[in-house]
Length: 408
Ligand code: PMP
Image (cartoon, rainbow, N blue to C red; front, side, top):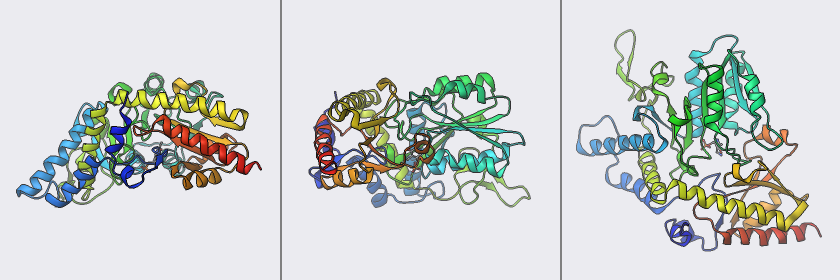
């Protein structure tokens, strides 16, 4: 059991917004004080550049920065810190993989993704396929709201170069069986590169990329209690070592005077230019913070809230509420998207907003998914460690009011 009152005290926003009910952690999590302090400490006390200066402040910044690389590697079960590339977020990480893999493509290759993907894990593949005139396949959902594994099985063959899918859908909350899917794909074609968008999983469940046997994994700092503008691309070292860099500049070169420029080894060859140093140092603190609570405790807490919210919403609104996503609560994370009667999700979110209840309304950057379900927009709530049953009570009370007002 998490002590929610104590956890809320870790987040300064709750001091400034006394009656805040924050149900939009899938968009971005709130930031604990320790993370804010870590970034501030870098900016105030040792804001030197990394990997360049030879004076103590620069050495301190470099050491702290590289310690985060080690910490991220351990946190996600990578075999080596050399498999961790810092990016500006999930979107940047996925676009980087798409550019890195351009050199690996050949005529006749196929790229596969799924209909539940966020635009960030859909458009880079659609564009890559288009640019290289490759076959682009989109795996549909089963009626239960999960990836249709039978169709996936039939779609993977000797031509499949890339399969990209999410660990958890940002709308359906579906937890995809990543290890099972990766094994299935690699059994059919061991050369297929499997890419996992972990943006919605990384702060909600323990992750082990080595067990998944994924080739690339992407996530954002701001969805795991860290700052915006930082993210991670994990890549299997054996694969990274074969890939040429695609961005060029400072910090990634060994010798640029010869005809052939000599680049640093992975991951540095993929990190041209000065990164968001303070943000990445604070990301390390965010990992410490999550680990102090325990990833399994976080998962248990959010799961209990999800089961309770699903039950309460169904009991209160009956046939008027349409909850999308897996019909198996056990396969869901703390994300619930729904429609309520004929009320526009923007109206629902605006009225809830007047009570300082923050939810998301729209397509949540998943147009293919919404269209496949015959929907334009939905309202989405999402849980994190600072949410409680009290938040669900407040949400339901105001949703009932909204239903009454709009049905008059
Ligand atoms: N993938 C998923 C599943 C997401 O939920 C998000 C953010 N909503 C992204 C990718 C993109 O993340 P970012 O905007 O931090 O790059």
